[in-house]
Image 1 (cartoon, rainbow, N blue to C red):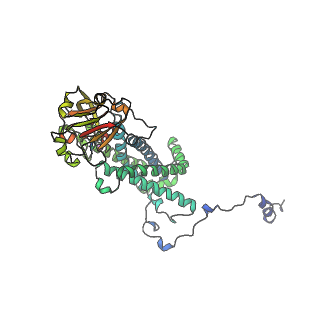
Image 2: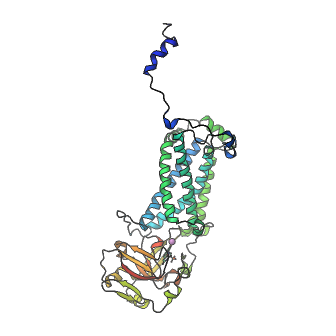
Image 3: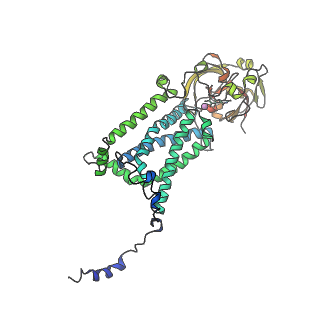
Length: 422
Ligand SMILES: Nc1nc2c(c(=O)[nH]1)N[C@H]1C(S)=C(S)[C@@H](COP(=O)(O)O)O[C@H]1N2
Ligand SMILES: [Mo]
């Protein structure tokens, strides 16, 4: 009996059965960085961890993930309408659907700013941990985190600059950069969520069993700083609420008055509607007011119509919103000629897409394409009047396109030519 427990006897016998315990290559520790590099935020004790906890990070992460999901879906919708892949089709009804999805996109993005700041505050001690990378697997996960943090900060910052129309500050093509960075961020987020799933589940279970106390480190952290996780949440929620109240009036008219931070008021502008690009800005002041102006509808029976000739067509009125991708939107009363009447008159078939071209010579939004369903919709007008007055030069005089459920960028102003899309 005694001999059996003798390590000299048992050890050699059990050894052949134990698996070979070799550290996989991605888990082999890197050589430690030279200690003099451990300075600034990396210095021991440089960053206080009081008030931060796993549970706080997990909850903030959940809310961020939800907000990010809303932004991604609504953003992809907006992108899909403007650059439709073959399988994508967007309905013409309800007329204000895009107004809602894009309003949600911008409002959610803005409300996410305080959430992201709180999350970065909660996790930033991890960013400056020592050693920065332990092994190859750690390097991969840390690299993913950098992409996630960088991507999220870029999306929110560029989005805010866009709503403020500070394109000049950006110096890059906003739509392409915002779109591709969204994909990079999404990829990093999926990896991050998979890596954190166990922690998040544990934290959620704690929440659903209120009798379970917080882990000791949690409770200690919270009391150290003299505030609780609840206080952090209340602060973040309040900040998000203030941001929303201060900006959502750019799209929700009754709140226009509280919108101190909104770049646009939906009721300020000629004829009670904001202007995005003015006639002077588009360089069309002369051509749009010239008596020789003619609208060309290039079909089997080509039309060349003066503004008076357009006014002689049956006139229709529709209440439709301008919903700018930048986040402001406003509804207005438009009166003019049904596009489908003009197309029929020119002999253009009812099942083709058409392009609408502006007098404007250059610029991304001088041409738009209307899918056949939009071109044939009875609410799609070449508007001559706005809110019962002659269309203001800045709103697209002599005539502008207005169609239901479309982004503002596709509601072409100062229309000069209509033809079948190639
Ligand atoms: N020709 C032309 N049409 C245009 C634009 C433009 O730059 N050029 N801007 C578009 C954008 S971005 C928006 S939001 C709407 C705004 O219409 P409004 O200025 O009449 O409010 O017009 C659209 N039509
Ligand atoms: Mo716009």
